[in-house]
Length: 143
Ligand code: HEM
Image 1 (spheres, rainbow, N blue to C red):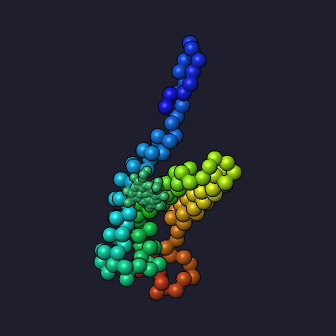
Image 2 (image 1 turned 90 degrees about the vertical axis):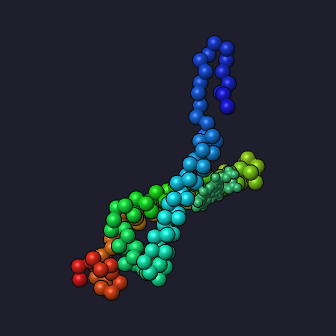
Image 3 (image 1 turned 90 degrees about the horizontal axis):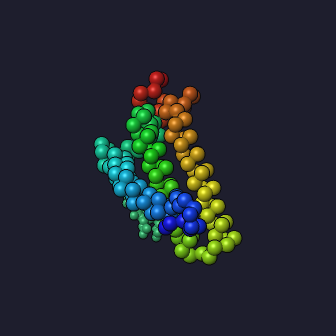
């Protein structure tokens, strides 16, 4: 959509956030297919499958920067994708006003809190916390 301008005034270009939101849903959807199915395949199908998932399994995966960044990207893309999708639903099913503002505000707060906590968990995770029972720790932790 073109912004209104007076005759003789240079045309001002405004960022069309709805358009970029629409593009984001498609672009993140394509990347999410790879990230989600890669995540499910490695966690549920490779090796012993779902039975192998425990603290040590997660600790072992997050010892590698590759899986930290994979999970971080999955977290950010999926959370923003889901929240932007919910924003569309709120726009579709509520009228502009206080309720709509509260719902969108709650979505924003939830996204910021969860992205902050999730990113902190991924990057501050210690696979070998001091004083933990040895049988719960990944095999690469020194006894
Ligand atoms: C395989 C991965 C995914 C793909 C390919 C995908 C694709 C899409 C696309 C293309 C849209 C836009 C639909 C439209 O505008 O009509 C959409 C909407 C949406 N997505 Fe996803 N998505 C994926 C994963 C997720 C995840 C993990 C969540 C939740 C965190 C999510 C939540 C939503 C929501 C709430 C909407 C809005 C629904 C609506 O407008 O009716 N999606 N998705």
